[in-house]
Length: 370
Ligand code: GLY
Image (cartoon, rainbow, N blue to C red; front, top):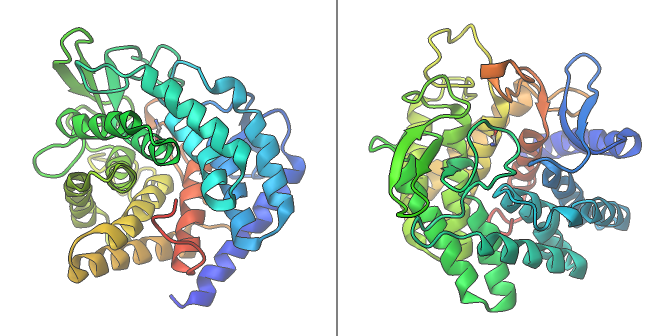
């Protein structure tokens, strides 16, 4: 696909950002229904509010238009009360919702909020388990607390690694790196596929079970678990400087590329026996593509870097060609098939990662800057 196609897709998505900014009320866009494109919102940001801010920060940086930076700043203030909420998903909320503002636009309030959230997260670190547990207020799944974690939040390491660079507090980087490394044992199978979640004994740190919150079964591969692993370990390697974390990211990416359907867009679970008569999850493909674009910068060896770039490019091309609506929404995301929640919808995080990837492919942003 030539460069102008990426620009055209960015313009489509930006038009939807403008419409959403002008019309959304009552909270952060979470997911949208396909008929009229209306958003279900979350008053306090749930685990996803940061992605909306992230799209505004990216647009501010790419256009130089201060209106987007002002808007992002206003939305970021709504996240301030979440700094100390007891959920490890704050790593996602504040990396995209705040730290990105500091990284991309130099916003000093964004820096302050991002650092505060990183320090608060680090305060919940369990040194026996070498992990920041999900916490009692983790937003969206059934088993939460001090003895649970999931691959979806490996990405916390990015916020901690960034905050360590900003403050010189090496402890934050060390906690981030350990948290990311522990999830290799928790979630990565020997063949490179990923199991979403794990329980551990908070007193000894010993893993007690592997299971899934959102996949079809504990032994299946839920597409978003696979994608979060690729992205989470790639980001963790970059921001903590622990380059051993590239190995799990690459192993997970190889597995993805060997198992994704020929049209490059994953179904919601790789092991759903109903494939192809079941839901896609475009958000999983967008996350995986964003992760592979980072591996295309970080992996050792030109051949490997080139292969990751090619895989990411064909995934993003397939999303744009077949799932990005004329109005700029990324459709056919599957939030939670187990409870039939938003199974063919626009999901704000999928939209964010497609938008980020398009900016990388169009040469407007460096893949490892964000
Ligand atoms: N827990 C994040 C997700 O559902 O992908």
